[in-house]
View 1: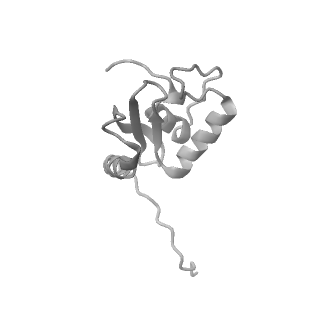
View 2: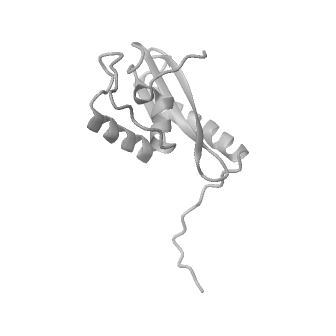
Length: 129
């Protein structure tokens, strides 16, 4: 608690890179053998985070630790925070990630709603004038 961690290899940091416009570090440092340090690969990964709506740190910052994070939006539809869950890989196995993501997304949506975020639902009906 109370420590700073790099954006490019933590789930919370990746959410801030993907949704809040935080800058990618110019010289990303490696923390484990799984840390992505090549700038093009980081950019591609951040785009994937943006597309899927959540980020995962799969032993990229701490060996044996996996994290899932989602954005929290305010009333202006701006990402103002992130929330996530972390645990040892033995307690967050890859086969359970989908259900963990769902739970974390539900919490993120609830917090966003508390900040008055209104998701825009797409409509397939034509707009009449």
